[in-house]
Image (cartoon, rainbow, N blue to C red; front, side, top):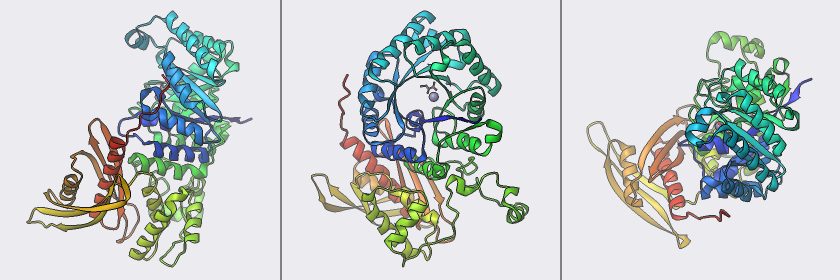
Length: 519
Ligand code: KIV
Ligand code: ZN
């Protein structure tokens, strides 16, 4: 009889924790809403004690997002547990997640505690968490490098203290599948009250084994698995949600397990995370990469025409990949536009619809046919609700192989005191090429000089009128900000991306609100 496996998504916590993947509150909220549509069982929304921003986003996700359990992470420290509870208590179904390391190396060098003290602290922390919340997960950090006997004692103690979920993380991605499976079998046999809690797996990908280890744990009795979209996460990342879920959906015959995930929402979810983090999935990434369902060789194409199953073990439709040839054009109305977005699995906020429709009309004027890929690019470009302090008004480039590039950029700037009023600001700059010159002209207008950390250009649609997508990551002070711009002109796409990143920077540096952390 196949078993139902609960999916805990930790894109917003373990995924966001990785350098360069930070999201602002609106972006996290949008991802959380999409995770709810995707049908995950638990959304780990953040780690509230780490920053006022994390506290605020857990609180808002808990207040707004309905459906999944909302989990909030805390170390085994009283003030962490109190802050995590303060942030998540408004959720329909809150969960407190307490973590404490159990491996000799962590206990000795990081915690400076002996095993008995760790065992006592683990139980006391779970008791404190249970005094607030009926659903408490305990994670034995670095479980796979812990003494299995000691690990079993800790898990028994926390279950007695009230833990409803016990997690066995391969924190440093050290395990190999058969060994991880054996640890699960051993814990199921060696922890007397193991059946009173849900047994969970959490794998990192340092050796590229996170998905394999997760599936091995399922085979050995794990009832919950912890995953991230696109495999985001610390270092090499976590087990990728789309890979584990599709492995279970495609090979339920071998794995004897299934999930409640709506797999047709996978593609839209992955794309949303790519858009808000500014980090594209590699083209050959399983399930969600651009090439995952592309068939280039003639022999394969002929096989597919004869019978799709020759080279396709799952259909693109099953993961929500837009495959339709239907195109919209400049005569298409708003109803057709909205219907198409709905079909593609995109549910933009109603307040962004006028901007999206205007963007679509603009594009339809430049291109004869607006494809599904164009629409996807458009929606993802307007996803985050960042105030447009600066907006591109116009630019003029002078460039060539024998002259230094010059760019004149004019931005309209919103008056902070009166958002209805805008002024036009224009500057000119020289640079190493038209894009560099444009970015320098923008720095002069804004009066700040962030470091450009990353810049990429990609064609997101096909043909000579393809839309170019530029992504930039800038660093200002200790923080990084992402921006994305789209246009059929690559310089314009780059300027738009840079201005978008500047707008996030302005929002976060001038509008930093300190939420009440309650401790
Ligand atoms: O990898 C890890 O150990 C974690 C815990 C907080 C579950 O992320
Ligand atoms: Zn982790």
